[in-house]
Length: 206
Image (tube, rainbow, N blue to C red):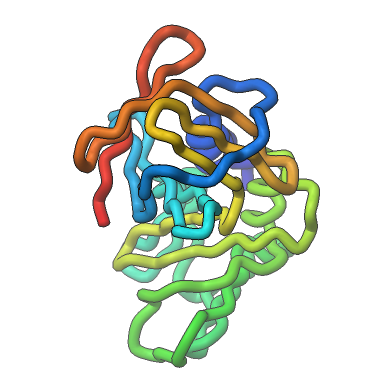
């Protein structure tokens, strides 16, 4: 199996970078931006989940891993359904003498559907994500949501953040890059100035 490149890791790095560089110390949030925010960019499907305690998770919907007719497609290769082991709580995909994917379901068991939230355990997919993001903590929490055929990957509590109405500061943890930038909040839209002079627009979805 070829090493999957940018679709998971580089895109998540893109999500964590506003205007890269050392961030200042976080101050108490003066504006409430808690919730799920999607980056409005046709080339990237992901964003942030800001909680009320000043922590943010990064999520992405990659286009190189998905289910189709119960077969798992990963990096343009079809892994037949017979290699997918699932008992309602644990999913393991063994292929070419390796564990491609290993997921432990959160919450109640469901033998009828793959849909749900999982913890991403040791496997090839986790290795590539950790390496690509430069995560330094082996215990960093990575989760996967399966939504019909789609996968959503989340780096849980990847950043500490603050927003004072004019600047957003993102302090990366466990090797995630830190960043900051001028930002303007208007309703459900957060516009962040990029280091290259462009803008990144986040739209609140819930």
